[in-house]
Amino acid sequence: MSSAQEPITAPKFTAMKAAGERITMVTAYDFPTAALVDSAGVDGILVGDSVGMVVQGHATTLPVTLDQMIYHAEMVGRAVQHALVIVDMPFPTYHLGAQRAIEAAGRILKETRCQAVKLEGGADQAAVIAGLVSAGIPVMAHCGLRPQSVHQMGGYGVQRDRERLVADAVAAEEAGAFAVVLECIPADVAREITASLRIPTIGIGAGLDCDGQVLVLHDMLGLTSGRVPRHVKAYADLKQPFVAAIAQYRSEVRSRTFPGPDQTFR
Image (cartoon, rainbow, N blue to C red; front, side, top):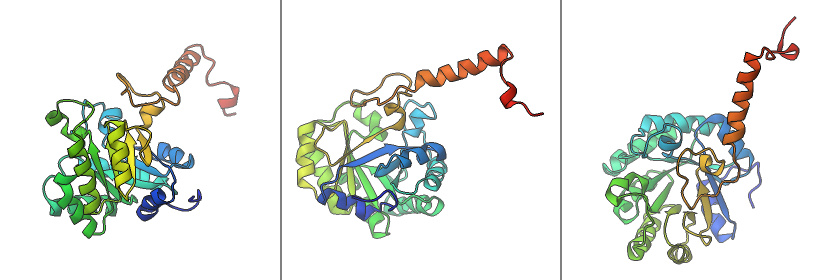
């Protein structure tokens, strides 16, 4: 197993599957939270375009721009010492052909300390994945539910087209992806895909048999506003203590007990 001092590279990430090591990934969007996530020892940190929903307050990920992704990725990249940092390519940076995708992904790698990009798609994006890989850019694919295609898919439901799911995952591997996220697909299909690929599968709403799992940081810490997806497990409820701390501060200021002697200079 990789030590906490040894940075994880894309080849090491892929090799974890052959070694039988379960892979853990969490999202992060800024310096302090990325440093904390990295200190917990996760294998991968995803600078997700989910920033559009959990940080910016949009209803979808579609409004997020390349400049915004680079802004957040640069902060995360400076904070992380151990985990592999992967950055989502926002819509539509990789839908405009391999050359435009290379230009966008090149900016991400040049302007941040991050090591890989992620894009949604499988067979339909195989040529783009291959082009990025040929340019020396590690690519994580993303099959199943594709949030950037929410309007085409008609919502955020479970994807059940087994034939397409398998074909997408296989095409991503053949194009050179070093891993593939499987989002919101039946567990038995995820198990079949995982067994058929040499590269790791990272599940989110795809059952226990993927090679690893990824969660959105705000979801797992209980900070999400509104509906929480069924596949999420909240490992903490930080919303209430967060609000309570601010309310206590407000109360102490109004009652003239803050600042006290310990916070006052003489």
